[in-house]
Image (cartoon, rainbow, N blue to C red; front, side, top):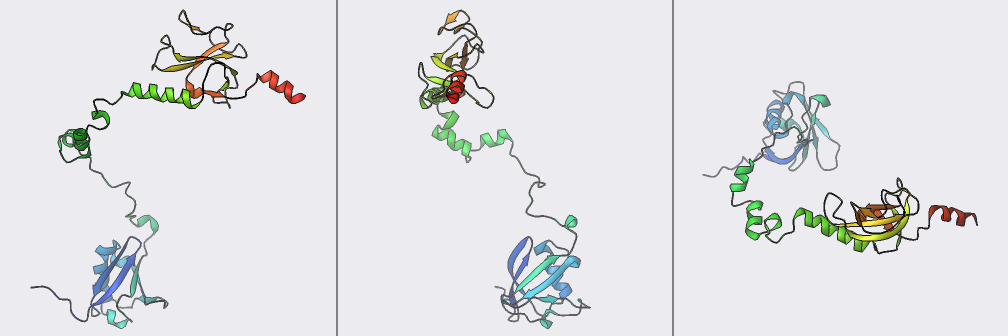
Length: 247
């Protein structure tokens, strides 16, 4: 048999710092009883609750009495869908912030169990052969090489272009692009290197690496850098630029 609330019950909006909900209350409840009913809803202990009733745009009315065990809610101007705000009178340090999830223990499914499930995102990726499950997907090193090749194209790194090394704030060296391509003699990830003939002898070589020559320049005027460290532009030698400023 369905339960029907008594006709005298009144729907009210209950708000607090951490909750907001509609509740039906019985006007014959005492204030003390009402507060015990609010405790599990708001998370505020009954002894620390301060209740305020607001009807429409009217000023709030405090729901309080000298003897809250005997004073009924019917003593206050209750109306359907009026708002009762529950204030927490405890010091801020004693209150629980239910919106802060940093201290809430989180369950992590063990990797073996997750990988064995057939209803996970991982299982879907495996079925669709996406990402690392794509047999034709490039390896991480291949992706890095392709990214560097795109840098060469997007930066317009062509032979004989004037350039400067980056970051310009800490590396003021300038020169000309003399080589673009792989340099097997340099350890690390394969992919294109940019050989630069520097305007001043502040480099590391003469355009050769481990006996293989990639371009020619004076000793210590050559340097090999990755594409992302080179910016092409109208960069005259630093000394010449200063002379032009004096003209």
